[in-house]
Image 1 (cartoon, rainbow, N blue to C red):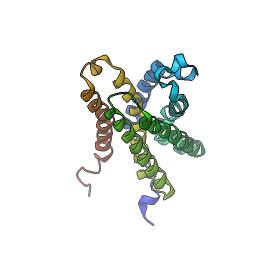
Image 2 (spheres, rainbow, N blue to C red; image 1 turned 120 degrees about the horizontal axis):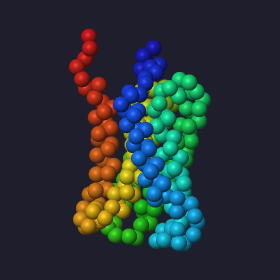
Image 3 (spheres, rainbow, N blue to C red; image 1 turned 90 degrees about the vertical axis):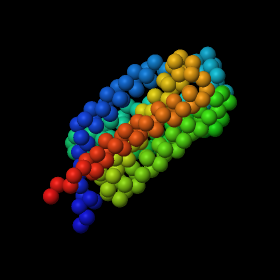
Length: 210
């Protein structure tokens, strides 16, 4: 039997700590910007009022994956309560897909400038769907380590949905002009994903132990 099909890897402590810290920071960011969308009124939604339904789905649906993501890569929960881990995974995938799909739709409907900003957010949505889909495919084929890595990638992309919103609202970024804003939005999800990839593959790229 292929040993990779039955392995039970544990997430490294530094990676897990980093994910929980990033999640905590994102919760703070969420608290500063998201609650107003739960008050369904034109005053709360402002310029998004004519797209209020997809915006509500995006914010409300994104809240759950944001909060439960770190627990999906915590091996302790996976060993202690595997049925809870599976339930959280299904919730993450289904609710996250609704939220990210709504976000992609908002990017297509966007009328604000610079329009190139929404190419970055739409591409981010596609990247999330690819990562989440690969995580699902891996677990269906019992490739546990590959599944864990793809879950980590998708959660990093989930976090950058929040980071993108913070970046777009920062006065220092706005002062740089439209082109700099678009470049910063790209960097806000591409760079974290690249760093994550290095961390995930660091051990595999080291010296082989004999």
